[in-house]
Length: 266
Image 1 (spheres, rainbow, N blue to C red):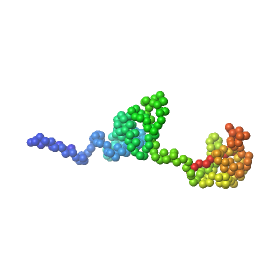
Image 2 (image 1 turned 120 degrees about the horizontal axis):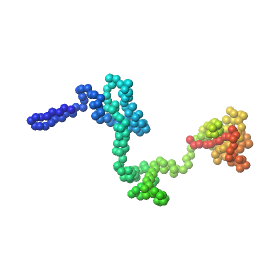
Image 3 (image 1 turned 60 degrees about the horizontal axis):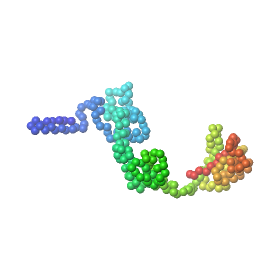
């Protein structure tokens, strides 16, 4: 910065020079503004849940280590950013992104803003000074109803998913599981098919029987569809126990040859 005073008029002329023609010491960089790109970089690291100390070390690099400093290192503003500034930057961003400084007012403004958008449909809103939207009066029976804040919304896609009912899929995932030594289900075979009938299930189980001809099944747990049960009997015989049969005690069965079959949509 160059300053010149006119003795005759008494006016002072100031010229600000962005670049310096002399060497800048480390302490001079403390007073420079943090570049906007650096601020955005810090906020991006905040959004990825990186700790302030880790962000500081990332910005400083090896300059922060005394044993790795050399006289050839050129100082930059990032070398002087501390954890306090990083936390303050996050707080400043959150404060600027709010509609109002007051929580209740900010929430009310946000709700009214969302009501003007076609993307969202409010399911429920109730807080001080506002009326309920799309809801019954059951909330009034709660002991903290006067001070309760409740806000729910739903997108058009979410509403469509609930209203369309059961969806028909072209392919199914046919799983065959047996219990392992930890008592958990271990998948021993996968089949992907667009058929869910007895013949398809029989063909799938026959491929297991072909590879394991000595396999014996003692107990079967399957879905409500009868095709799995009938296919299992057709391949492994009719002596298979099942929780569907009333004469079978199925509370606990410790046989190592228990099979669980289920169909899953893809």
